[in-house]
Image (cartoon, rainbow over all chains, first blue to last red; front, side, top):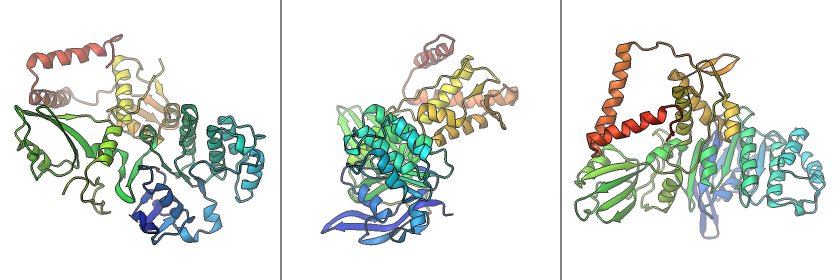
Length: 315
Length: 133
């Protein structure tokens, strides 16, 4: 069995002249919880649909559970649970009819699990799907994805529109889903609190381009913030400082947000002769917002041979 | 007394560090005693709604450091304090931590009095009933 549940190679998709996913090289380790991040319209859903074989790429390829995405045999498809964006359901079907319908497609269907997820989200099986609240719909879609006991769970923005209680139920279900050994979960989200709780690894998509792919811990440690204090007006940043994604001046102080700090970076900072240099702790949200809002001219994708790095900085 | 752990997202402290700090603090203040069982990885992950790998990594680290111990088939417990280190080794470890504390403090520009005060505050917080930071 491959060590990766999903692997993509230069996966690219154009819609007309617009490139929505560009040369995506994603590797989702088996058994991990993988957070897929990116601003609205970055190409996350398109990427997931190509990975599932629901959409064909313009070029490039992908494999899921070791099989070519575009040629998934039915028995492999049965091992994948998919929660599509927007929690789509057949509005006219009652929940119990939706179960009867859906379960026919799968060799394995855990009825007990389906119903306990429904119960967890307080869904009455007699309800027509179009009358479900957003949270209840999410519960139904999650129950549908989990009942076949998949090896791979793909959740596209599962928390969208959910109130805090339903969101908590969703997260608890995800933790519960890890009870199956080697089950891989990939979920896309904007909610950094959820990423912080759940993700082992993350990938950050920024308008069609993959900007980072690493463990959450690596991402956190790669983005660092320093406060430099000076006697008078701070000098210009020296050209040798690489990896600056944000530089804010306030009075005689500079707040620098950097990626991939090396000894060289520190030396370049020291060469500015600040009166003091303080490294300040930064929250995941601030790190992420700075990173995605920051100034990128060149993008350096991590090589398989290199330790994971976070692409960034002005070259 | 059972172990009470809570985590908060959105802060500057990573979740794994919050868990490790709280467990170590509980052990240091006697909130949990040697031989007392702590929740299993899965139980704590489900209780705190976290990736079980995060909890597993914290536990592995604390077991490695001798704060916790795993008893096969039984669960994870607070380690009985064993004389793992000689007095000399303990002093050597303390020296290393003190060096880091003093050097960093001086580099950041704090005075000796300020450093003393910061240390006093931390020690006071460890006392039972003291306000934990």
